[in-house]
Amino acid sequence: MILSLLLAQPVAAQTALERSGVQALGADFWAWRAVTQPATSDDVPRIERPAGWAPDWTPAGVTAQKAKLAAFDARWKALASAPRSPQEKTDYRLVGSALARVHWELDHVAAWQRQPHFYVAQAIEPVFEVLLPPPPVERARIDEVIRLLGRVPATLTAGRANLTDMRGPFVAIARAQIDEVPASLNGMAAGLTPFADAAQAAKLKVAVAAAIEAFAEFGAYLKAKQGGLPAKTAVGADAYRFFLDQVALIPHAPEELLVMGRQEWARAVLFETLERNRNRGAAELPIGASIGAVTARLDAEELKVRRFLTEQRLLTVPDWVGHYNALPFPAYLAPIGWLGRTFDLTGPSRVGQNATVYLPDPSPKLGYFNLSITRDPRPIIVHEGVPGHFFQLSLGWKHPDPLRRHYYDSAANEGTGFYAEEMMLQAGLWADAPKTREIIYNFARLRALRVEVDVKLALGAFSIAQAADYLEKTVPMDRATALEEAAFFAAAPGQAISYQIGKMQTLEFLAEARIREGHAFDLRRFHDFLWLNGNVPIALQRDEYLATLGER
Image 1 (cartoon, helix red, strand yellow):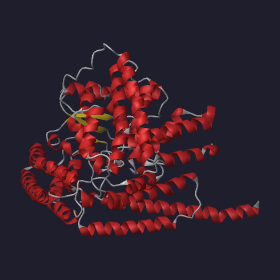
Image 2 (spheres, helix red, strand yellow):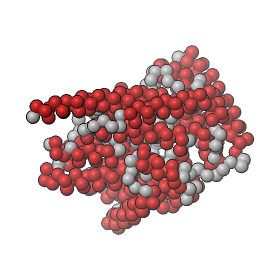
Image 3 (tube, helix red, strand yellow):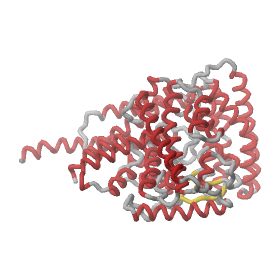
Image 4 (spheres, rainbow, N blue to C red):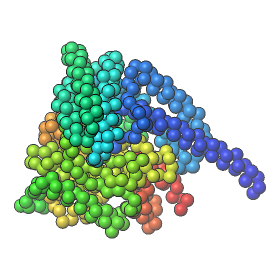
């Protein structure tokens, strides 16, 4: 007995050192990532930046990124042989796949070399993010807008130096976005004027003019280079397999994903068809009478969703988690709303504050998702708000393990958001709303189709135009949304599979846990684990949860 205790001591000490090493590596990595992670139009990957941050995509900056990444790789590999508990094993693999994601971005997708609209995003997405928190706009925020606008020329100059492998379709996307810039930035500045003092207004006008001029020069450069560029946007099979194996930790080949997505699409079509047949003769959901009516209803329904989660014992809802509320578009945000998802999901330093979704005036001409919100806001509440992204991220940002407080991969986050929709559907949230159930099943059709679109775009079986045609016809959805989705998925391969494949991984995880635990299985406890660890890939969550069953 004494001998066994003595032998255990070095192992325990080594485990403690290893834990410290992985935690230190993770802390250093995420601090570095806050400076170097590309700006994105997506909502879940947004991160808080250090004070005074500005994007640096100069050739020297990219070289420095690659050198630092190699150093992180070496530190991670040096920790490979240490023994680990299930929780420590998760943390180690989490850091490894986070490192792999940077390799994916720099070496495989290589947007910094191939996608001119990447530099449109790096130049003005940071401005968009500064303006996302709800009004009023403090003068400090206006100063930050002015500062970031001042960085636009340097960012676009870096793009001209780095874009050595441009692809024609991505040039077309960038030029279309650049055409929107003058009206967008001038409209933003006009909307900010009531919040600015005279000196700020003057500086803002100068900064906007300089940014518009820089974009015009960048657009002229792209126009001159566009002829004869390759049309290929696909990353190819080898790169896509690297993403699945090393980044997303999805244990399926691309060909298997196509089969899985097609099967789920057929299932969603069946359920939608049955629902529509069941509801034959029922009136369509009316469009909200006014933006005030839509936002008021969303706020009221969010409270009901929280109560439903508690009453049905689906998920613990702490009182400290903020609410997911709606506002009309502020005058300064509406002109630049096309830059990204207009959801302010707060952040680690703002945990407990309310999230905000900005909505346009109700109209039958709205796009696919906004039109659904004006008919019934509950689907967007469930996916984006509570219990979806905002709620899940809020829990994750307070995780007792610092490594798990950071966004990692949207296969987990988006998979959980999509899972939440079906969870609430099957639990009865829309029992008295037949037409909303049709919306949920139509959403499911879209998420399943995204798998096929993602894989075929990545492997080169779809062009962006073909993907848009397919989405427009098969979901169906409006042309503008279909084009937007196809362009985004072509530029960010691997994102579009996250909804359906992440949800399917979650279903398999739940089923195995349910069988393994038998009568001891508790749905709310399972969901609490899933939501708390929602930034962690489902494969890692599953392994850890099942490995620790014997500890209870």
